Amino acid sequence: MNFKKLVKFNIKNFVPYKSARNICVDGSIWLNANESPINNELLVLNKNLNRYPNPQPKNIILKYSKYSKVNVNNILISRGIDESIELFIKVFCKPNIDKIMYFSPTYDMYRITAKIFGIDTINVFLKDYNNFDYNIIKKNIKFLKLIYICRPNNPTGDIMPEEILINILNFCKKTSLVIVDEAYIEFCYYKSVVKLIKKYSNLVVLRTMSKAFGLASVRCGFSIANLEIINILKKFIAPYPISTPTCNIVDKFLSNKFINFMKKTVLEINENKNWLFNKLKKINFIKKVFESFSNYILIKCVSSDFVIKKLESKGIILRDQSKNFGLKNCIRISIGTKLECKKLIYELKNISYKNVF
Ligand SMILES: *Cc1c(COP(=O)(O)O)cnc(C)c1O
Image (cartoon, rainbow, N blue to C red; front, side, top):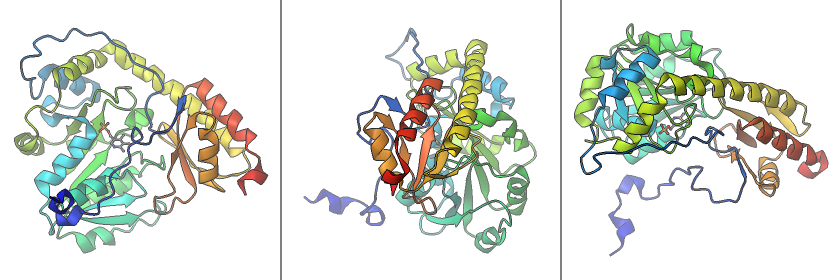
């Protein structure tokens, strides 16, 4: 049998998401997946592994509620933000009728997940936030169910101004959910819009333990929204989204001790980012260094391919963003430890301008 022929027609020629872990290269300095450079190790005793886990463990919800300052009734735990992105599309979008919107260049999983479920996408290319075109929402409002906003945005590192977000929320108050992906919000926590949940019932905020908390391997995320939305999601989420070991680890990391540790790490990463930003600006084959509210910096080079390969030969792994519309020759650099940043600058300086051309 030709199994390929069995695959749904609309995704037959689907190009899968290339996760950083899929890209097999040798390296010693990994600056390609926006992970924390600090390794977390933890011994936890996992009891009752023969039993299914609690679907929505109350201890975790209570701790996350304290941390995020939202009510326990407004929180749903998921297997990372990626499960939440999928859940919203599964629950709210009718194939071939409904649409989702996102602002590119951005995180690719909104597009990919929609595509897998046969949902049309409206991809709005956002060059900058001046003259934001609300007409594009107005024009599509009839079938527009979800608007995904990555804030701060991956891979550019910028952040949609709160005024624009509020205008969007008001604009589709009765028609669409606005889903703000705050995967990196700890790196600019004062910018969080979680406080707006009470006022705007169509606002959803997505959070994760994967980035600032340094628990990418653990797979745990949160959807924050009004009670009605949370109750709808609960009906459709997988029966046991997070495992007992995940639950035990996250419980530890949401303690005051580890939250303080996370905050210290964030300060360190932000310091390294500012250091790196100034150094990168002085390198002559880098044409643009994007300002970032997150734990990565986007740069535009003369030839991204050349720079990526050159650094790869030195064991430093970066992420090419050239395939993104509008980001030709752009590279995303995750912020590592100070030593990793220094090694990166050292190797970049060794690339001479002549070679790049
Ligand atoms: C890394 C990332 C995610 C994935 O988060 P998980 O909780 O690990 O699934 C979601 N959104 C953005 C913007 C990301 O960069």
